[in-house]
Image 1: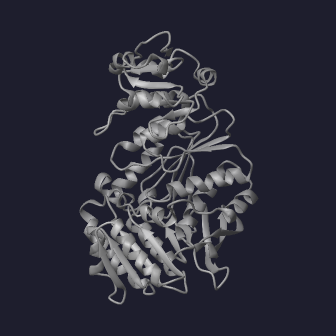
Image 2: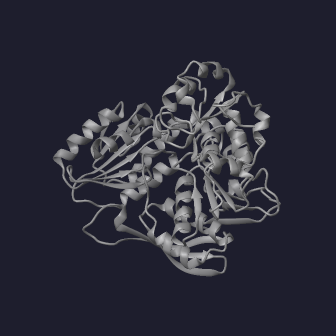
Image 3: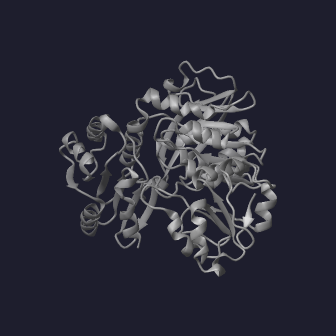
Length: 483
């Protein structure tokens, strides 16, 4: 049961939170809970603050500050109830206080309970690359067809992020799409148990998070656990181009495959990349055209941009929409109007520097790094082409091999004028990179920004690619230049 602090202060066993003793939908609507939040810095009016105790920071320490922001209430560990008594009681007036043994466990259980309130199709998207882009492309298709849908926020794909987003589901939606990301063995089963998706999508399998997940075979095995709780009424959607996914996989539920190979149910043929205008550079000037085969039917499809990953994402999204019986005309219209978003091969014009940035620095794996370089090599500009490449992390014992491989891959991009390598691992790229490319090794994003700024001041109409694992911080370069 849940109590208002104004009348009661009590504890709630973690197991009891599964039901809460009341109708959850009525509770949400009655007390006006907008959503749940774990970040005291960004919490808004109408939200419940979930105080999580981490390894370095205990969010309970920020409760007093949060209460001054007109929040609806708190979800806290029960040992903090005594400390609430010492606060100014005006701050607690008409606030909901839920005291539990473990706020993290209870957040997950609450998400599980809330998920059970909905019968419309829930889509879970996982994969080594393309999760967020596929989710956003799906969301764009739904919006294009005027179909009410919910999509999880940005890349909030851990157990915590997934739980917070589930609690934003509402009755007016027709579909819900969630991203499911893992970095260690055992995590996918937990995510699948929390979400219980009706449709499971595996976008692609590649060498990412190998430090925590192991070999490519181990990664595939872990990703396939998205189907752990599937029944015959569910449907799986996987990239059929990756034999590691399809080999010895005989599901007891319907399966749709997608990819570039003709053996797939949904596939792309006769792919052609063209520039819309010869004198303009940047990915938005490119069109990728291909024949889209949906089982026995063929359509002419167009995507904005020249990144080959977009084709795979489009095929995955098409497979989902085919199962949901969304008209092909809506799918094709949406694919032709979809644009990249923040951190995913995003085009940013720097008017003061007279240059374009290709912001692809949210994350990086060997496959996504090669795809970014390949797309970058197709672009032309009047000034210099500059690639800022940082460390690819979480590759475990194979990290040296993969960074040197990227150096060798650059033989396909000899039109790059400057290569700025950020971080110790990225420095390894210089050992195998073509000698004709001018290379600058720096330690961090700040040094990279300073050197890049000098180059752009001397060379107008330049084109810059930014690509690295998120923790390298290359997005700070974007922020500094945009400021």
